[in-house]
View 1 (cartoon, rainbow, N blue to C red):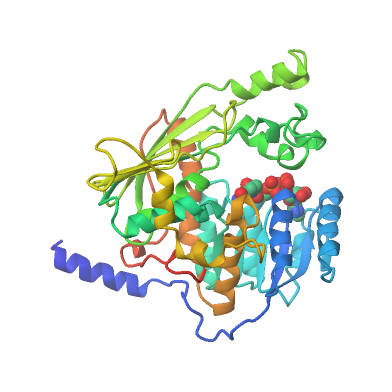
View 2 (cartoon, rainbow, N blue to C red):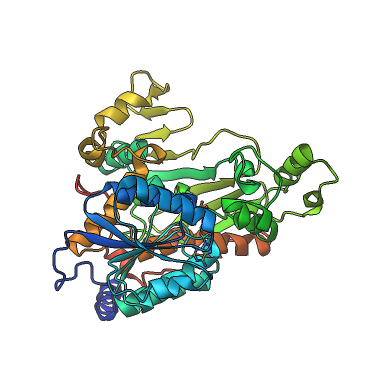
Length: 452
Ligand SMILES: NC(=O)c1ccc[n+]([C@@H]2O[C@H](COP(=O)([O-])OP(=O)(O)OC[C@H]3O[C@@H](n4cnc5c(N)ncnc54)[C@H](O)[C@@H]3O)[C@@H](O)[C@H]2O)c1
């Protein structure tokens, strides 16, 4: 096909494609956002605390199946002095009763991964126009397609609460990328590099150095997350690493992931931890964990960039998402806190300490909103404020959240696709285009100014 007719045909196809409106023209300006939260575990409580601090949010309903977690959430509400919301509990589908309420502007889904797709879809079908889920979107690739199709069908917004996109250093680097300091971006690196052994075997007594139990005897994520390490091998948690670098190269907004492959190392860390802490005769020492300790994924992008992504949660290590951003003019490496820009850095071939650069390019969002007086620097160094703020401000304006369902699907689908690659003997697997060609026309919308 000739280039001109190809472009014309794709433009027509794009126009015909049913799309979620980025602005709801009928929307009244909302002053107070009525929020429901499904899942009041440790993460749900962090969102709850931030929501209770805002005077533009009313928490109208909460739901959980665990009385201990509901009790902790209720304590937070009492302490805030705000009215107690409706509470739904008792069985795993109690959340459907919550979704029957007619006064919900947004629902936050903060439950184990295996519940996300069902809860998102039920929320959309209940008519909720802003559905926000904690990372991830689902388990299988089909889950991801289901969420995208349902969001389109209901012309509603689904956003994934990817707080890592709001780290102060990440946003300053995004600012530098957009101002061309690194030249043309060529390669990026990131990962979820977080020793989760204490979390995977948390017995609820001493959160980060407790037992070697999981499943029903575990507390919080040990109840459910550890099972994923038993049965799955892939990058099980890509989005804290991938989301930030994806925004820097406009994935789904002029660029897209084309393909990936993943390699998994042997699995030793979790077994070793159980033996060291619980002894070789502990029943859990017999569990065979399928998840490789280090899973390394390579992605290729339509505009030519490569991304190297790592999942590293089973071995002793300090926390680091390990971002690296490299272009034709220079490089940022988060691990050594260094930036080098050719012709601008102090010394030839030597790292500048990153701080002066980060201060100079501090993102307008942080400049405007980060101050101790209004307690905005809440949670994970402030990023939890921003991720909720982004959602609430989008609802108040009746517009699409900056991270939409296509972003959520692309970032989170790395998991099932990496599992497939490993299963196929580390084959390179094609990446689906959830936008159906729209990625070519969609304009970047994440963190464009100081508003949200
Ligand atoms: N963005 C971040 O920084 C961050 C940090 C931690 C966790 N998370 C994500 O948040 C989500 C929740 O993690 P968490 O650490 O709060 O786990 P958690 O186990 O502490 O909380 C999950 C809660 O969901 C409840 N639940 C389970 N099934 C339910 C159902 N059918 N109906 C109602 N409630 C149900 C559980 O009882 C529990 O209280 C996960 O997706 C996790 O990956 C994100």
